Length: 264
Image (tube, rainbow, N blue to C red; front, side, top):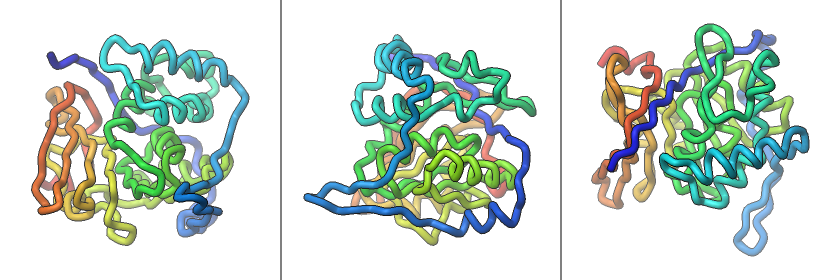
């Protein structure tokens, strides 16, 4: 039986920083990596502040969710490691580890931890996979993804959001995430093909460029549907012949994909 989980996922903004500074950071993608015994190693920041709250959030609301609990240990560990409170305005700090979206200004919210964890799990990420995220927003989802592989490429269509995400990643030490300001409908050809693509806004149809940039054997996790209706979360798998298979998960509600997607 399909479990109903309605989530409103929207982007949000911090105050704007210097454009020149951010754009320089956006063009830089460097990190130390070491391949030892087939194991890829990379620097991942660690935060002791409010760690117990993160662990409790995972144990209570993600691992034991009454909807669709997340069981992948790597994903659970990632959710424990990323400091959600760093992606939440100071006014809502006391609620940063609740299992719900939070207002963060401009009528927008940071997404629910459970949906972040579940979408991450559905990607089935392996270390060394190249992952494309459409919709950087606050940066929280990208930070979680970067716990599983260093090759994270994220696109944000709202310039200010993209610049702010770059600065936040720099401050927190998420140096393996590369952010581009542009239309996510077009994907990011420069770094394709991707083992996985995650979309945090809803088009009515799967953008053709994303299908093209997905590796055979890869998968896209994407909400599909019109903005005025309940959308569905879908996992799209691409076989080695280029054929697609769609697996519907459950109803969701995301903000619409803008840019070129609105012209379709």
